Length: 141
Image 1 (cartoon, rainbow, N blue to C red):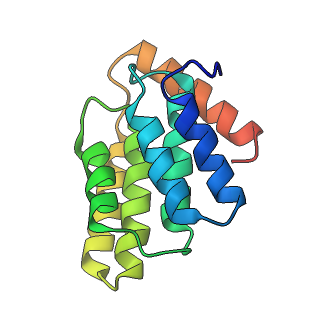
Image 2: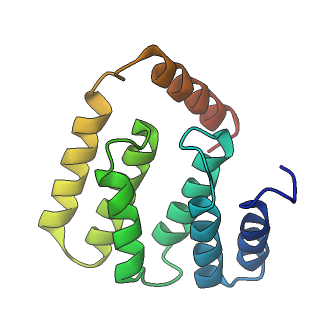
């Protein structure tokens, strides 16, 4: 990561806020960092999105309607890599469950499973997903 990268400033702020116990501010900065990426396939982009969704699921605050809208947009966007959409569906399910919206929760989980069961459309996407999954499992995430 170079500090000159447009997303780096917000990512550093997100981690700093998290370490200070300012979870809402951490989520806001993770989202700003995520939105600053110029490429859907940049490797660090998934880690930023995962940071955002981890904070939303963490129970430190109630996610806002804007948070839900942000994650829903990723979940519905067929141009987003499958791994992002799965992470979004899982997060939406957790948020819905915490809001006692059980049927919505069930729907998100079911749709996420359906997305997960589909084969990637091309070998480039499949290789990218495999690489990210290997990184995710070997880094303890």
